[in-house]
Length: 500
Image (cartoon, rainbow, N blue to C red):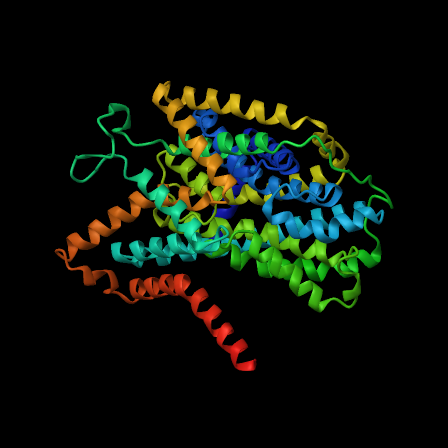
């Protein structure tokens, strides 16, 4: 009952007129950037961090939540009508959704996508509502060695899962960890990696790194590969709603997608890509008409889109309860919390419950707003694709420059933005993932603090790092995450040799 009372108090905050306005702004922005390929919620929130410094934290995070959910809704529009996923989680939607659009059933594909996103997003938010406080209470039993082990697990999971190879993933992770060491050591007062530059004594601002890697790096990458060939937008046909047969074939995939998406999204490095792929595979195997897959099966749209939105709610579980980001967007949200002097985790539920429950309640409100926006206004969102790409990315760079300059009025930050932006461009060219670098930067200093605390308590005894069952289990899982793929590959090779 206490959770319901807290949720009602959260709705009292989320339904205030000013917060409803920010929720609407976030949903509009999120849908727009989801429709525009190559621009994601992480980039958008990163660009808005300097701008929202004067906005109340409740309003800012309600807007950010609208951006996160709205991007998932908008990404499905381009996947279906243009065969160009606006978000990585919408890749599987393009397979069947675009085929439905070519067959004149684009309206039905967009409808099942929007309704499935609403259903799964609501179910995922309900799960977040009741699970987050419990997980936050369990976190109170964690000691410094347990937190250190948990962060090591987060590092290894993100580095292994994200990117095309472990080498690239760990390279990006160590780059982020190196950036996190720059500045004054909080325990000894010694300067580290500043090279005599006074401007670096406070370290490198996370916002500068975010804007550099996403805005500058992505813009340079898109500009270097700009093509003049426009994609074909398939017009909406066949009515604006779903038939009774469509409803019958969609409701089960919506529920299954939600059940797949939320748990996987809650895991370190779970993200939205894995659950959407699994949902598509499950729907293909369970379908009564498997021959339609590849030719426009509505289950192939309903399931992955539901998994996509449920996973987005799952991403917030480790972020809000443990302060651990599992995706690039979650890392940006963690930076936003820190900009307001807040640290997500179990203590935040006790010290600032209004902010957290207002944020959770706003997810319910945002889902309703997005359903209203996306069903009747699809034609308007598609017209955003007519904006020339150079104008969009040129505006992003100017906005990034103004935002970084306004944050600190520091020429050093502008130079760092240009330098790290070039590194971001190289990373995109050679397919190095960005998320491990961001998570290494933001969690690296915290992992160092927890390690020092554990060693201080044990008077330098390193065995303390495996001295509790929680720490030993988490470190064992981290080792398995690194080496299990090698063992599985060798086992498969041995099996194939034995068959030969």
